[in-house]
Length: 175
Image 1 (tube, helix red, strand yellow):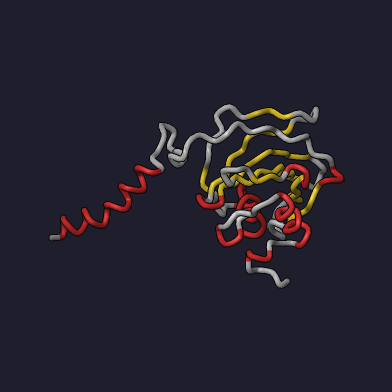
Image 2 (cartoon, rainbow, N blue to C red):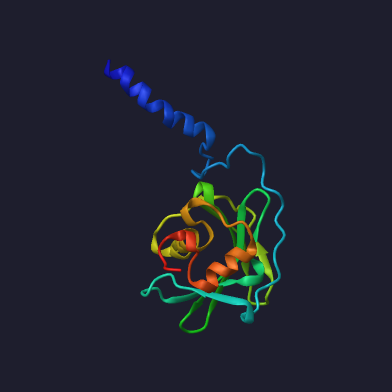
């Protein structure tokens, strides 16, 4: 009887493994909805297009999203350029995507000092975790681009959420 109960309880887990599975490096495979369309990298961000967002009072970086880089693809991927600025003025720039329904992110390219992009060849979708090194992604996910796990529907909605300090659907701000 216990063996049957254990088998029944494991069926949903096995079904989930069929949907996502693990690749040889331990990452999650994309849903079997087809490959992601080729991504066009945006223009390199300009400081006048930076929209600030708060990650944490204890983070050593100031964070921004390039307003002109925000897009929502036909397959519901929210793409954006994020800028992390250290107290000394050093910049870390990356072009990323969020899949709201799956709570996942992907880094497509990193910014270089000569204001060009370096595309990542082995980029893959990864789970967004609340750990300190990925806190900016968790904040963008919950407060701006994926409130209540529903993605924004347009670049304009993303820009408006960043300018207002959060997306009104996030439920953590008064509007």
